[in-house]
Amino acid sequence: MGSLSFEKDFEPSVITPRGLAGLIVNGDFGEMMRLKISSTPTTPRKNLNLSVTEPGKNDGPTLDCTLMNYIDTLTQRINYHIGYPVNICYEHYANLAPLLQFHLNNCGDPFLQNTVDFHSKDFEVAVLNWFADLWEIERDQYWGYVTNGGTEGNLHGILVGRELFSDGILYASKDSHYSVAKAAMMYRMDFENINASINGEMDYSDLKSKLLQNKGKPAIINVTIGSTFKGAIDDLDVILQTLEDCGYTQDQFYIHCDAALNGLIIPFIKNMITFKKPIGSVTISGHKFLGCPMPCGVQITRKSYINNLSRRVEYIASVDATISGSRNGLTPIFLWYSLSAKGQIGFQKDVKRCLDNAIYLKDRLQKAGISVMLNELSIIVVLERPRDHEFVRRWQLSCVRDMAHVIVMPGITRETLDGFITDLLQQRKKWYQDGRISAPCVASDIGAQNCACSYHKIDYIIA
Image (cartoon, rainbow, N blue to C red):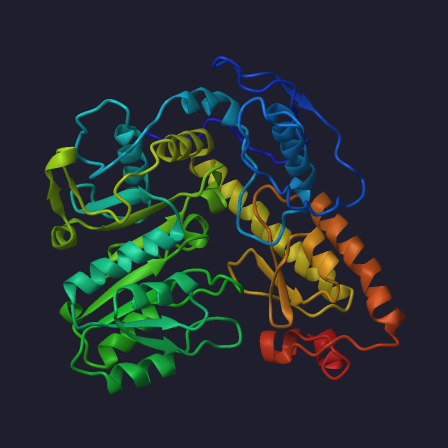
């Protein structure tokens, strides 16, 4: 695929924290020293209560000491970061660290050169071409850019739809990312919030009902390829068929695919993200499954659509159709480096390992009598919410209502999962007094078949 190839097989291990033996001095990076990770869960970091002081007037720790303590705190917490979709398993920061001495700004259109040399648009275009090949659109038929994250990708994709259909109505599942509703608010769009099924997938009957109610106005549909909390995938083919059944022709709808996390998982299992279907745009987050020390993403749309957004900006001698204008020139290089080093074979191995580890976690929790749910093709394991806030903070879990989830990213090993399970089982004995207190019913959140409460336990065990 393109010029990017597999070079190295990444096998994650428990990450050894690093502290700085020396900080950047006169452009020279100090050696990184290895520290041992604690065998017991570490304490969540506290607010440092910092302030900015004038040089020579600081009576507290030195700048270097403050930074070193901060780095040591973060490195001790790496293996307890299991509740949010960030891949922290990468080893290339040392090779790319010298780039920090340069200000790289990819302002404007990535396909047009700047009047200055301090940009990385050539790296950016290489990354975009890789994703264009992945999502099956010819290189002369697409336009895109490296964003500051998935939210910007959603804002841009929906904006493209709004510019095509100024009177269009935005449709999105209630389980879609919150940035979709934010886009509707920012762009003053009519918004239809579609019901979601118990697993987090769009309710297609509700979509059909609302499409028919609004017949006569174009539809701008956000398709979620991996919902934020449950990892559910909206079925693009069913949505396209629903549009056809409701009498919408291809010139009456626009589809944006939010594939923030799953956009680099699904193509290596079952390719359902393709521009061969009548979709308008796709976005992913680069810091999630791929991994990058800075938030970033990729947004790709059809080239024929982008003229509605493009504006000539004489000051930068370029055309700009992006949301942010000035854009981080470092992130395209990080993405390019990661894609080149890992390659498709590396992604396939990462995807298989993460899916296997997610099933492993689900099975172990289920055998322990804990309410748990795992969607097909998902690495998000949803479980009953722990009763102790300190436990939630220790493992940095995300919680909604009576649910929590673990996102089994490439850097999360079975050793980490085993540590989490052991800690959870020990704490549950205290919370539920060795079974004398019943665990809550979460059937309304994850389905009766996944609930292990006293009422549903028999069916749960049989399932």
